[in-house]
Image (cartoon, rainbow, N blue to C red; front, side, top):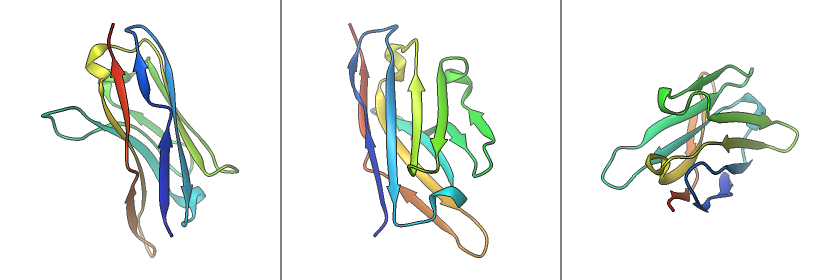
Length: 118
């Protein structure tokens, strides 16, 4: 059974930090590209950061220099360290796993709420 379980969301003041975690199971994590996406109320879901199976990283322009994505293949976990948080970072954050080729899949977690407010 495939599972992506996010944790670490919550309420934080502007300028604060949070670290999100996503623990994966039921598929070959090390062969998957992992990413974080977010969706704010009334807006479309958008890519925040992606890390490939070989460690290549892409960030959305809006989070460059503030957010850091990393993965631990031994723990089947992907992280998103978020610093200098802004009110506009408020959203539900989703973990995603994709793989293309002879084995193809696209899995989503249930999401975790991040609220940046004073």
